[in-house]
Image (cartoon, rainbow, N blue to C red):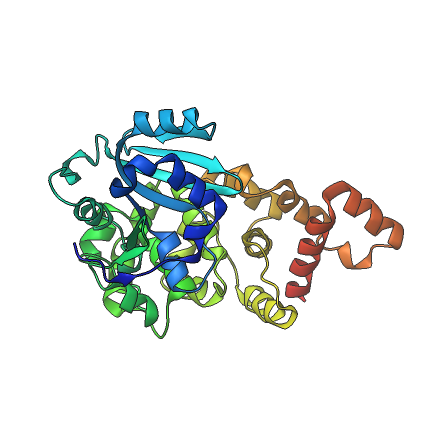
Length: 340
């Protein structure tokens, strides 16, 4: 596997990443950075978590981190997935020595070949980009060019992929909202519609994670509207949204004040315009998989404050802020503006 060019993403020089590399210095040749951190850097965005693939066994990864005094845990043994936190940075570490991945590793060839086989299983070409510990970029599917031109292209036939992995339907809309340009591929949309009933079979936490990612995109309204037109949105959310226009207004407000609202504000706005009461919808969201850690307490409080927040007295504002916090107060106020 030949590297495309020297990449050197800025996060490679973060103190937390440098410490991670120092801890695993003897295994630099068998470590690659994959997925979102590479994609986001190419898109000139700030990455979130740092994803790593390694030839080390998961037990060795955890032991090495523990010996270095780094907090870590086993996330999913079957997938060889463990996590570690250094400072403010979370690392997702994927071992090729796992029940799922063991056939991908060949110690007789450069590790980049094994890493390439690992990312080949990813959903879209822009998520198959990876770089080694020296900052060299690898791109076997043309994901870099797709990213530049706003193409969200599955790594294999979308009809077959979405049949086996319906969660990728939601991820398609999520990534188009974040990186797409122009119109979505009709063939991919056709595959989405063909397998939309299978969305109900997705594990709730995976569905919630995909929806949170979509709502966290810079401009989610267009994709949510398209999902509604394709009769996908209600199944994905777990409740029926009556209309989306307030979300479009929220996007305009965000542009005007140069501040993007957190995804919880967008979710609360959708819940306020569902076909049930806000609290009934809250219960539906929790049942669908919206874990409380993804929706802080103030989201539940929206139903209590949304219709009175703009008419509070100075004393009422102080009381509300003391109860739910200044940030929550501002986010609920922003939600109210979008409803007017």
